[in-house]
Every structure is written in C-alpha cells, then in structure tokens.
Image (cartoon, rainbow, N blue to C red; front, side):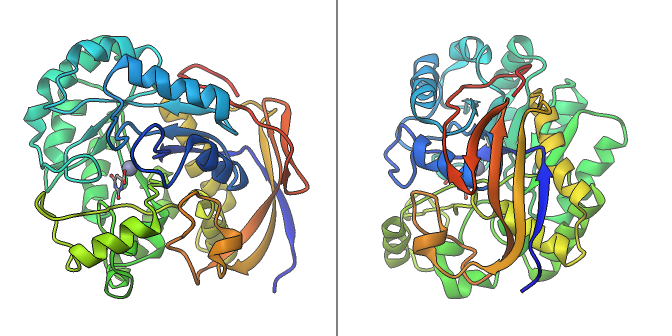
Length: 380
Ligand code: DOR
Ligand code: ZN
C-alpha cells in the first residue's frame, strides 16, 4: 500500500445524475443519492428529467422535485427540464426555463424513451428553448449515428450551447473537436464506466454492465482516457443511473441477450457517484491523468457549462490511499446497493467537505446537510 497523501480540491460538480425521485424506480432517492455524492467528493449535482413514470416535463413536476431537494438533499442540486417530440409540453418549457439548469433531450433509446429520433423531430422544442433560455445548455443524449446532424441543428445553425453527454466513441469526440475549432459553444463529457469498463464485461456481467450508450472495446476506452487527459474530452460526468439488483436480475431472466426493442424488457444504467473520483485519482497515481486536469474536468469546466460559481469557501479534502473496491455492503453508498466497479482499484476517501463555508463532513463523517436547489449564476 502506498503512503496516504492529503489533497484539498475545489469540490466536484456532476452534470449528469438520475436521483429517481419522485418515480417508480425505488433504487435511489434524493436523500440517498446526494449522500453518495457528498461522500464521493461532489459539492453540486444536476438531476436528469427522465424519472420513470413521472418525467420532469411540467413546472408542477419540476417544483415537486425541487421541494424534495430543499427538504432532503445533502448537497446543492440543480434540475433539468425535459422535452421529447411526443411529450407535448412546449408551453411548459417557458415556465420551467426559469428554474431549470438546462434542457435534456433524448435522441436515442434508454430508460424512459423507447424510440430513436431524428434531430429534425426536435425542431419545435429547440426553437422554443432558444427563445426562452438562450444561455442555458441543451444536454444531448444523441441517437444512432446522428451526432453531427444534431450539432449542426443546435450549435452551428442556432448558436445554442450544447453539451454532448456520455461520449463512448473516439470518432464522436473528433466530430465535436471539429466544431470546437470554429469556437462554437459545444462541450462533451465521458463517464467512468466508458473509461474503466469495456464491452467484454457484458459477457460476464449481463445487465449489470448494460447502459446507454453501451460499453466499448478496451482499446477505445483507453483512447477515451487519453482524450480526457489531453482535454479533448471536456468533463467527466457519472451518468449515475441506479436500478435495483432485482430489476437487473429480472431483466436478465426475460431478455438475456439484451435485445434493445420496445417489446423486450430493458434496464439500462449503472450507479457511479461514490467511486468516480477515486477511480480518477487512482489513474492519477498511475501517471495517466494530472491533478490539474481532474480538477478542470470535474469542477471548473462543469461549473462553467451551467454557470455555477464555486467560491474559495467550497472545498473537499481527500486522503489519497489506494484501495480495492471489494465490499458492496460497506463501500457502496447508492441506494441501489451495488456497483459496476467491484474488484477495481481506486484511491481516496473524503475527509472534509465545506460548501459555501458550511462544514458538511469532518473526519470522514457527515455532520451537516446543505439542501438547496441551485440555478445558473448561483455561487456555492
Ligand atoms: O444507461 C442509462 N441509464 N443511460 C441513460 O441515458 C439513462 C439512464 C437511466 O436513467 O437509467
Ligand atoms: Zn443519463
């Protein structure tokens, strides 16, 4: 075991989590998910709108979620509005734009969306969002082979800020880089599972290794890590998407081959908040990422994308020491009770967390909460 090393960093911001409340998916709550985030070194997270059974497509639903955040969250949370070609909520977009941090669009199939759309299907939604929230980003889950078309429609033609979620292909990163060269407001993020797992994992882990977009070959995963290290990939986002062990098992029984089709049961997504930073720190200690790049990719840039300011009064102190993720019962913090990273090496335990001058973790133990809905322009 290596010697412990203490570092203090500004605190991470995750632009991509699914806290699942309120919804029919009981694998996570705003309380359990934000607790995992706090002890995972995050000081703010942004919640996606695809709540199963209750997508955040109306102001009422957005406010219901925000009310729970104000009561139960351990750390500040921002919330996205959602809109799909069939959600028929154009009039709600204007109302939601004020307190939502951005707009999430699902161009391809995943939890809560069983269709592949073409970018033009979102035209009315895009026009409206540009009108009501010109400075708030579109967070895109792109569909099959249509990323460039989406980029042309959203950024190149209308100048709206676009964040391409969870890139899983070096080719997609090259496409995004091409548009960045024209100084267009476009960024992209990568998830820990696309860096540290690979498509062969599906053979041994079945649905516990299935998510959207799917895992890629080991070679491509290595390439993505290099692209993160060089800054070609802007940020790390967890896409923390908990499903219960029972749901994953039941999906394996019904659809062992993983057929992606509305007539088959599917269950895409993995939890990740508690291990994202330790997995990155382990790579740092292997010399594959610098601390500066980790801070940039997990704090500075994500905060900038959503217009959040992180003050000098917000900090996380880590004790870096390598360990093996070997006990789901004691080491996982997500309400789902499992992790796709079992057996992997990680580094770092959160020792102290201060948000906006308020101490939330001392000596590795939670001492207080900071339940607050945050919005663009806020400072923590
Ligand atoms: O794997 C995924 N799971 N990808 C997504 O885009 C959504 C997520 C979920 O909500 O379960
Ligand atoms: Zn997601």
